[in-house]
Length: 247
Length: 247
Image 1 (cartoon, rainbow over the protein chains, first blue to last red):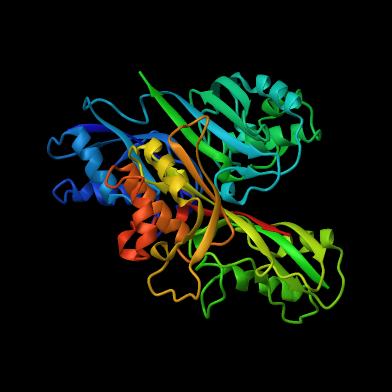
Image 2 (image 1 turned 90 degrees about the vertical axis):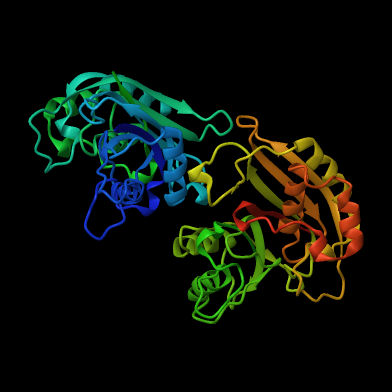
């Protein structure tokens, strides 16, 4: 039986999503607990993609197979009882044996939270504490240049050798919180994202918001395909994988 | 020179406010850093009162003496650079040598956060994850019976021997968050609070909200002066010392 699981995690105390020897990761934590519910047969989970250390998820998705059929609602309750309090399963549904949580992704949404107001220590692991003003209008202008199909090589990890650096960003937005306009949320909906791509785009957007670069510099950075032309990598704690869409 | 400091802390990773041998506490962390700014002369800080393990503060206050005069703004910047990211000094001002941060307290405000909606893992250290409905109207009725001057012995720690258990609660309120009405904040403004008093009142209010007790039971519990008559102690992560008032 193949299942598709939607789950959230607080990345603060994990060394990222992907299994590693001797490090607490999201994948290994979930697999250990699912294995207990599978008559001891080792369960492997296949996520839509990995997330880096300290990065969060509101709606990560993964598929896995169990040897016997368990009611998805019951399975959800059982796994949530076993999991630590920084991972929470939101939904489990049965899917076809042909479904693949990574290969079948149509689009993904990432959000990045920035606090441009005073330091908020309760949010320090959940929002980048930038704590200084930024030019919002210029950042919004720059976001427009990121939308569309581009070669994003300049925005990925230097040593990340890929056959294809072309990705499509379908939609971007910058939202200021109603109650506290110093809380910014950048959103990126795209067909796929390269490693560090969102954090490198955000780091560059921050430099644009600081007035160090212009919105139009995005065009030149994309064309250069040179990581050195883009800005710093924004810290991981502001980043959330929000949604993964299929079909 | 005597200074009054207003500070916030995230209580999650502290063994409470008060100094202890071999445990990370808020007092010992601040004193260690202030001592560095006092030409190495040991600094003792006197807070408005202690808070228990995992309890937070939005506006705790403490006084301390330094051997030489330092500009309060500069002192604030220096100490914030030295402190870990889960303590943050909001303000420092010079006060008279007669001022005492505990003895001169006129009133204090505590708030307690409860989530009656679905589990929110990002808020698990900052809000009690009750995650089930409560009768808000009945809790609001019960709050009225707590206001005024009463003997609060039934709501304090069993082994807490005190000369005087009489305290005055000046004002209470229950606020539902505008954006998410499942986020409840109980507020208690009072002249003073006994150990565990807020958490024991909240634990009792929750049992009233569950329908296990009536609002009027508060009168009987107060009269009994018997800890066993009150409800369970609510968990620490929902509790915040919000304000301390002087003069």
